[in-house]
Amino acid sequence: MAAIGAMSGLRAVPLARTAASAKQPAVVRAQAVIPSTAAPREVRLASSAFLAPGAIGLTRRSVAPVASRSSRMVVKAEAASAAAVEAAEPAEKDMTQTLKVSLYIFGWYFLNAIFAIMNKKTLAVFPYPWILSWIQIAVGAVFMLIMWKLRIFKPPEGGFTKDMFKALIPTSFYHMVAHVSACASYKFGSVSFMQVVKAGEPAIAVLLLSMFFGRKYSWRVWLTLIPIVGGVAVGSTTEINFSMAAFLCAMTSNVTSALRAATSKDLQADTGLKGINLYGGIAIVSGIMLLPLSLLVEGSQMGAAFAAAPALMTAKGTLLFGIWNAGFMAYLIIGSMFYHLYNQTAYQALGELTPLSHSVANTVKRVVIILASVAVFKNPITPLGQVSAAIAILGTFIYSVVVQQDKEKAAKEAAAAKAD
Image (cartoon, rainbow, N blue to C red; front, side, top):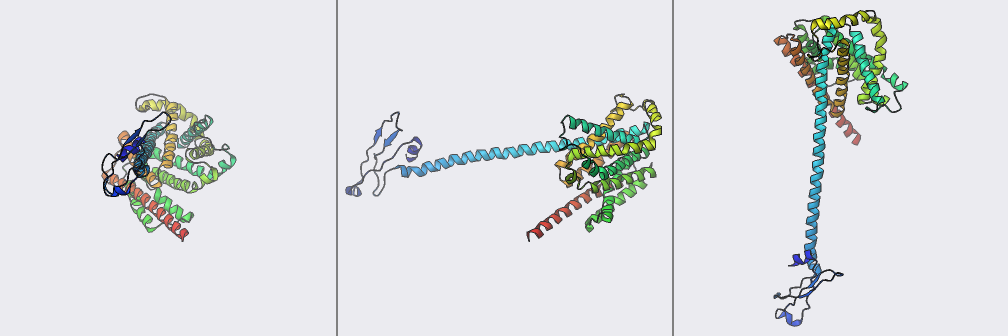
């Protein structure tokens, strides 16, 4: 009854007790006041039942705890509903983030595999890696300038300045050499062989950073280099169509890629560029640097090479995506866009992933490219070559895990020392 009164706005009034009420029960009268439009509904409760000696009548004070509990229940229900909504929002955001990262990784793998295949086929009809490398880098540079102009990508604050250009020169030089040597390796050897040799990049990076940059590594990191070096060595010697030129070019790409990574460490702070814009700046600077060198090395053959390429494409049956006779220039430009876009998606994936996750993704990428190239070019790999390639790639993965663990351990120790 008290609960009903509390919820309906009824007011309970205690009855006065007399001395005789201690001896016999008091009769409680009920009086109702019909509510008016100006006043809330009110009911005076006398008792129509018998109250035990010492009992008290119902008052607003006695009803208040019930009303309070009811209010708390409503508040708790509202809080639970709000918490459910808040819990659903992060889940939705996590799903969106997962989908976005998955698309980046898929694009990275797909574009890189397509580029590797197209690059190999392009070099079969246009065997000039210096000119080809410049075209591929320049197409990406022009693409970035257009994207900045149209504000599709946010341009660097204050524009692309001379200070940015100067700061990017060392990294851009290494990027240029890494790409030219990689293209040359594609020219002289198979795609799968080049990817196996490229799996040795971590070993090169550890050696160079230890010798010239004063970097120190734990014994566990050095231990992970054994399967990498061993796998690359065995995989190279068991390659059916082994080419020393392809091996040396791929190793040159490893060295310059490691130096590019080492010199790009502080570029974001020095230039204010990051992600897509950082790669766009590197493409612009390396394209400018590569043009005179490519003309010097292969410029005299460029006219004849462009004239002969369409006929060679027809003779070899080279089609865009295997179905479209697009012509040599279209094939060249589209392949160059694949080169830029796979690097762009790699940078986008790097921005969304932890270093360890990105290294794992990069390791899996090599497997995808090797499998795709074997499927397209039918180049044979011996069983021993398959095992050694797997060992080298697995060693690269283990190296990435150990390096990340060492970084986390060093960060914790530094934080503990700072706290002390």
